[in-house]
Image 1 (cartoon, rainbow, N blue to C red):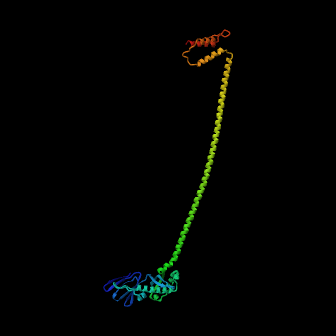
Image 2: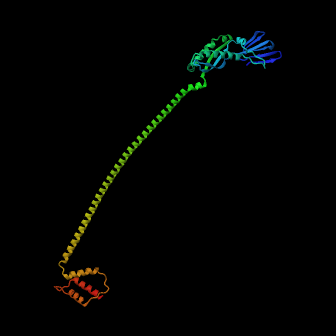
Length: 353
């Protein structure tokens, strides 16, 4: 922004890089350009500063469609001043002293461009229906406004160049907009519901697949368990058969061992019996030719060896006389057997006791 330093009877102007200054002194141009710096006398000088950078002008207005519907148009116009001298001569861009009202050049340009936009937009929208305006109104209206503003003679003569026009929105009234949005909203809601149902169906299908897989896994596990139980039973039966066979073999072996032991014991008993029988036969053969008295003496001797000790023995005369008579009886031949004599002597000794 330009700055002015004021001194008594004279002032100094220092311009900005975006402001085109026009210095008129007594109706003649003394200085003009961007970034100027000069001294001037306020009493006979007029300064105007026209911006040379791009200017943005937002505008909003209403129009009526062919089917009598009110729509609002929001647009933005970009322009610049290509002839600052003409602009300063036709619009108020003067630099006012401090305290005075500011220049109204920008407000004038905004009014001119806004009225032109509104006029051409109303003419165009009046030939379209609401549906067409909402569907293709933005692009069509942008082209219409750009061509109309660039060809406008007033703007060209003033030194204003239109750089671009942007139509941001073409919207109906709020209640009409809600009514128009309702079918779309319902359709979107229906699509959302359908998506939800499809997602649920997919979830149910996946759950069914998971359940089927779990059931198939359980069936497979049950089948394997059945095979395992059958194999374990077969193994148990085989182990029992092997154990029974081993027990039978052990029983046969034990029976054979017992039979062998019994046969051995029987043979031993038989041999012992045969030996005892042979001994008895030999003894009987020895005693066959011995007389009765000798045998009796031998028997008494053997019996005496196994009899207990006799503390007192009472012998009657009849028993003693008969025993002595039989023992002292001499056998034929006049000799007393040695065994009989020994018996007699032993008996006599016990009687003496």
